[in-house]
Amino acid sequence: MTMDVRIQTHPFDAAQLAGELQRRTAGQAGAIVHFLGMVRDYSPDQASRSLYLEHYPGMCEREIRQLCQQAHARWDILDSLVVHRVGELPLTEPIVFVGVASRHRGMAFRACEFLIDALKTRAPFWKRETLDDGRAFWVAQRQSDAEKTAQWGLEPIHHGALGTANNDAENDEPA
Image (tube, rainbow, N blue to C red; front, side, top):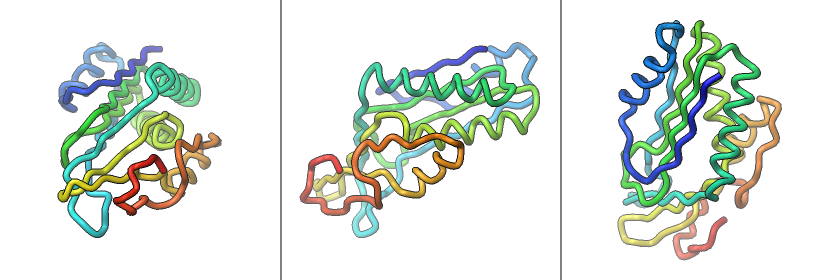
């Protein structure tokens, strides 16, 4: 079982990461599935400038590794790679890459979906959106993400309040 978890500030190349999975599985994989998450505009009322991601170092990597171990235990996968960025990220920048290699596509699809669903509510990340006018607010975990995690038999960990985005841009405290 091979897995790799990276938390980093610098950009990544999704094609390069998918190629890395392909090389690491040395012709054993029949499928490589990956998910690429991008910075998007969270605020419904005003354009966003950036998203700042903060994490709990050490605990974050440990939680993601545990999720990867669970994915390897649930499905017959050969390798997994999770790369998550932190720091200030401008609109349209990649945030997260989740890649899974398996002998069969069904296993790779399910494991990849499990990892991104669980990552959204289990890994200790916090997001602060900055609007074009400079105002900022913390983005709360969505109930729909918690429900997706629960469908996998996992209890979501609530890093701040559940609900929709906290659009009170005057509030710069975590939700």
